[in-house]
Amino acid sequence: MKLTRRQQEIYQALRDCIEHYDHAPTYDEVCRLLGLKSRGSLHKHIQALVEAGLVEPMEGLKRGIRLVEQGVEQGIPYLGRIAAGQPIEAITNAEPMQVPDELLGKGPCYVLQVSGDSMIDEGIHHGDYVVIERQEHAQNGDIVVALIHNEEATLKRIEQRPGEIVLYPANPSMSAMVYRPEEVRIQGVLRGLLRSYT
Amino acid sequence: MKLTRRQQEIYQALRDCIEHYDHAPTYDEVCRLLGLKSRGSLHKHIQALVEAGLVEPMEGLKRGIRLVEQGVEQGIPYLGRIAAGQPIEAITNAEPMQVPDELLGKGPCYVLQVSGDSMIDEGIHHGDYVVIERQEHAQNGDIVVALIHNEEATLKRIEQRPGEIVLYPANPSMSAMVYRPEEVRIQGVLRGLLRSYT
DNA sequence: TAGAATAGAGAACAACCGGAGAACAAATCA
DNA sequence: TGATTTGTTCTCCGGTTGTTCTCTATTCTA
Image (cartoon, rainbow over all chains, first blue to last red; front, side, top):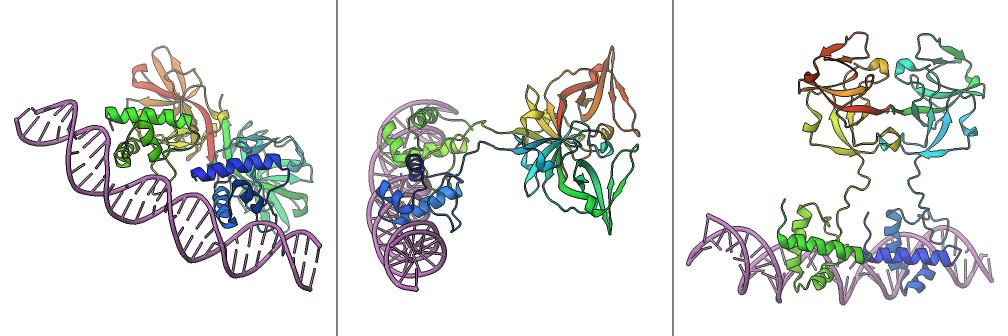
């Protein structure tokens, strides 16, 4: 979305205004500051800025005009290695990582680095980065991040049957594990994979 | 598309003008700056620049004259599937693809989609995207894009011996191929891999 | 030298932009 | 609660701005 000249002007004025004040200014205040006599006119401009992603839309609830924080290309949080034996939420040190849109799911995602070769037959190697969509349910056959006994996180293919959950590794030297449903928590579903050869 | 002398002049003036201003200038402003008295005259020149891809077309909207941003955040060119049997340079339809920095080499790179399962034991599957750094030499053991007999491009692990080049697939049902050095051209080295599970 | 290509002037036009203001509903205040 | 503020939606209007057109002058070329 490209801004017109007036929209740029107003965005600038808005930035200045918001630095000076420390509360979110109302339409009337901004109108007075810009010499506008009609809230309706301002509203059209603000609307354009909202669509351009520069101003927070106010869903009827909050009042005052707020700018969106310009978090420069945040990326997806990288949460460390999997098979490290702790729940995903527990990891706080989440530095962002740039991931192409094609590898993302629809919902919130995070990135883990794979440790071990338990999924080698699926082409998932030690050291690969996997993109995981955060969700607590999965379809049978999905590859999921599963937290077992609330302490060990692992990447496996899942099969959910009445009364039991089977986690299949993809490695001939390892065998499938069967759990009771309450022993396993799904923490996300595999959506993408990245590998660096350098 | 070739520009006339006047069109080049105007393009230069436009660049300067846009650096000075901080907003997109209107036709009238540029006319004044160039000493033109008619918008219509300028319009013809701008139109030529739009067709040359140097100025953004303004699709009926009135947002002033904007230059086309060159090269910023373009992404890596996606050149199509490998094993399609044609040299990489021959492909012209190169739409950009966003690739994380971690997967890039130092030099210019491109992206191919893998066709076939000849590298399955290396965890490279049919449909995966590979990031290739464009270079004509490789170290033994590298996975490279090799062009054979100037017509068939393929992704293989390379072993260069005196007088011969061996290309190893990573698939038990396929065997290594031996070529004379002049039969094989290296077109790039594997640097990264992307896979989507959606 | 005739004709084509290039440049500019100017008029006419339609679409867009920016603004005014009224009316309304929801949130907030007294 | 009732009154006021505040965001939203709507219509209307005038000026700006991009576009299109015709006409003319100049330069280049065959």
